[in-house]
Length: 485
Image (cartoon, rainbow, N blue to C red; front, top):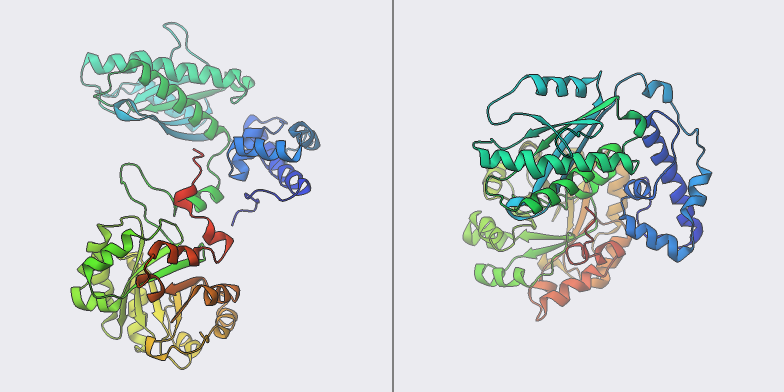
């Protein structure tokens, strides 16, 4: 979790508190870069808080908070370890992708001191030319380079004069203007323009034709890349938050990971592939949903059914409920080859089988789960293992479902016993929305449901009954995602 509260504060006092903390952090970061006392900015504070600048403006307006009052509380000398920071040359990295079509712009750049590694790269680029990738100085117009001096390096091989014209024309001017404007706006400290240089890698598609768009996109991408470099963007908190939610535009699908509970796992146990496909098309999109390829489905169609379902929904986290009792490594490999994100073994299997199962899952980079169905003493079983699973399932079989008891009292005991381990706890067996809330309140990370959803006449509504269980699950991220890049 981030050390900063990124949700909307409930009171004016809460907003002021988080603004002050983030402002001090931002002033410290900017001060180290500029090597002099500096004041925080709203954009920088928004980046620290992982919220859009416009969102921060809205909060301040609603609670009638003046940012200048916050800024004035940050001492101008708020520069811990300033002397230490000044001993080594600046080395800043920025990246940005903006635009669409053949004119899309992708900028990678380095900013740093002439007498440091960035300066060495700058000089090497100027003096070591290569065919099709000849570096050139950015210029606003011929004979007018910006400061800091900026070296353009074409990413795509320049094979003819037409391609060269795009680099020596709109791209060159766009990068130069973006650098000059960044200095004028105070993003790059004016006192550093003669000490620093910039190395800027520029992508121009061979089929790009619109010079106006080439300029437009490359200017914006360079401005954003410089701003990010100066702010040391992204923060680790931003990386951790987005890495399991992001979708690379060229790859075209997400690879979701867990560890941000709670989750709703929907068990697809109906041994009918076409009916199952129809069911999953009706499930609302949410980063909180896991799809379980149930044992009956796998027994009828084999592990390939995982890939068949993946064709219907590419981005979902798929669990293969193998209920492995023997040859743990082999069954993990079978599910892995069919793109499963996680595999499930039976807790009744020998410890040696479970150790091999968990080890193979971790070796391949997928999750290994152990289902404690019919295991009399789950804690004793877990203690017997050399390899600890990623998820422990507390499970009642369908034939045993009576009343509302779900073994929820074991959640706390398991957590306390294995408090040095990183794992999630799932509960399964006749779960309905009311018992789901109870399980989540007692510490469950994953709620596993089956018939309540798969046999419902309104599957989407049934799923949303569970997504209402907690504020986190109500955040149907794919439907209400805010574009902040």
